Image (cartoon, rainbow, N blue to C red; front, side, top):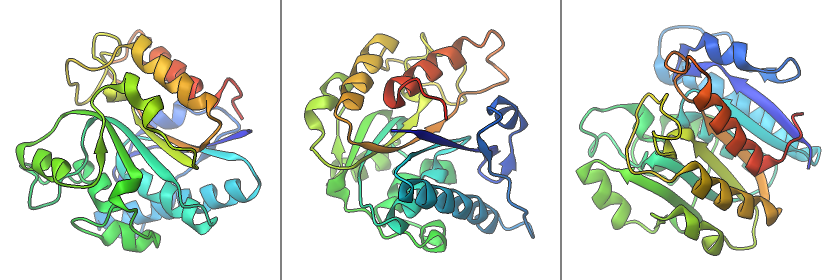
Length: 257
């Protein structure tokens, strides 16, 4: 399947210039014109552009690949899939759960909430702006999410989301259905990919995660992929970039556009 790339060079609604410079010449750069200072409105503009791109790409029989600075842009990807009439299963690869709400989050950080929003929990401003229909929790696999806040952990464990702590078990967990894979690169152990904003120790190694992603790719069920990137400022030697891009291409193949 031919891959089409969109890069949203933002962390939430703040511009992230190194991500724009990282993009290949034939990748779409998502930089909507903003009006006002409202964070949710600005983020909604970003997500709407992603949704339009995803829907158009899927309708052409191609695979959208979204690269951004935070996980909230997954809302735009799912909204776009739904606009194209696709209702996928979701695999969420992340060192963190992103399953907080304002009631469970110690910090109130919105970047730790998108998966909860996607299944209909917590603040629904971004979800409603994108026109997203909440995914059933039973259609979501969360892996490996080893760094959960206390109340967030309770929410995950009492939900219908499948929490798979061993990435090597992922291929056995995936049913034969359209699959959207969201890949936050901090799921990797920091020993293999140290340049992370929110590093969490004791994660899967490059070899373990790479083998799991290759197995998933071989099912040919992956219809969309998104990736949340590393910390460009820390990655002076580009070691983390090389590792993360190696894993992305394990999911989507070597074709770049």
